[in-house]
Length: 105
Image 1 (cartoon, rainbow, N blue to C red):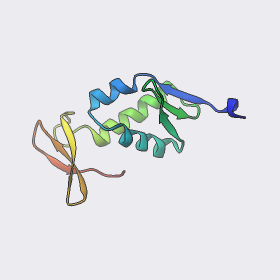
Image 2: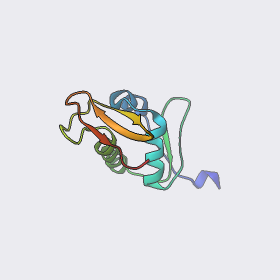
Image 3: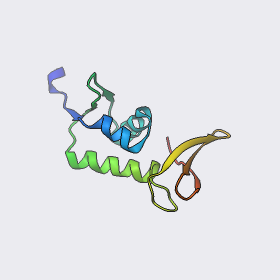
């Protein structure tokens, strides 16, 4: 029955997106891949994951995402954005100027 399905809400998802300056589709795709479950953003802007996840698991996933797709591999600052160059996604750092390929997704 539908009532047996666990749902985990990330209430501050909108704030997280603002801080990390990324598109919700990308982080949702990452979460779906890592948790092997569906997710959606509800009318209030909360991320809703299907499944039973602890707050720590969610925090660990977010930390993993930030390490892979936000922090500059050279200077470790979060001042990056994703740019596509010849069909390859690149992470460009505004702080140190480093450009590196983005792996996965």
